[in-house]
Amino acid sequence: MTFESTPWRRTAQSANLLGANGEPGVTIFEEITGLANEHQAINLGQGFPDAEGPQEIRELAVKAIQDGANQYAPGSGIPALRNAIAKHQHRFYGLNIAPDTQVVVSTGATEAIAAAVLAFVEAGDEVVTFEPFYDSYAAMIGLANATHKVVKLRAPTFAPDLDELRQAVTSKTRMIIVNNPHNPTGTIFDTEVLDEIVALAHQHDCIILSDEVYEHLTFASAHVPIATRPGGFERTITLSSAGKSFSFTGWKVGWATGPRELITALRTVKQFLSYSSGPAFQPAVAQALELPDTFFERFAADLGARGDQLARGLEDVGIQVIRPKGTYFLVADLQGLGNDNAVEVAKLMPERIGVAAIPMSVFALQKNQKDYASLLRFAFCKRPEVISEAVARLQQLPKVLAK
Image (cartoon, rainbow, N blue to C red):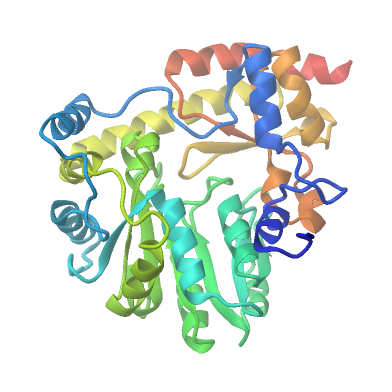
């Protein structure tokens, strides 16, 4: 029996999970994490916080378990959470969402990504993303047997070229995937870019999938959902989750909102993936969404301060930093140290200086990886004392690379 063209292999190939021989290999994420564990390095490669979310929200989940919220939740999510999501969208963005028909709760935003792509994208369709990209997008595009087209985000601004965007979206485009605020670059798309995406979606009759999980983690300006732009809502599925906004990444509670017909399609596919999950976490997340504005403001400000702390430490030793406008991540360019091989540097850092980071090239199509060869992504969603120790160790990087 041969499996050369099976869906799993397309998925793996699209997500850069196959080696040069076409066989599954260890990913750079696994390799760097393994090296970090082996050498007890500070892991600034993985994008998860090392501190827990609000105590009062955790207690609500514990109480829900004790009170019996341990069986299947409704496939669309419990009513309390769907209502809270709808209220959240109106409170922060002025969007009027019907909780019964325009909201679905998912097992993290990643499941919603999968359900959305599988609901609308067929073999031969084209899907446009910005590059670098979150690897789940490429994996699902491959699984759907569609063509993945990219619009490059180039350092140091990581702003897309609108002419390149226009050229990428064609009559074959079925979906445009937007990640804003953007992982892994930390950039935020301005309204000119958002409006062009909406215009192209109308012009070419395609759908916008907007991944906004970092919506509350912006440092210079408030988040602007593409669904709030003129003509945006009717063609947009908007995704978010509790993982990034509240530091509960392991709870895997995400959601999608949008027009009834788009959410119905997503929900139809999603019910045959996980059906439902997190019955005790869902009521806790519903309460978290109702936290006062000051919670979200303090959280973003605190995270931004840790990003500045890491950026200053890198800059002090001559490493160019592209400071983020949002998300957990900042990008460092090694060219100033005379090195353009971030993969090699990322592999030696855990042993030589005790810090781990991820090379940006892994977030690109294989044919484009050279365009990001000198860039490293650091996650700063760690406690201040951890960032401080990482900065002290990173002071040695120029000396290590000079040898």
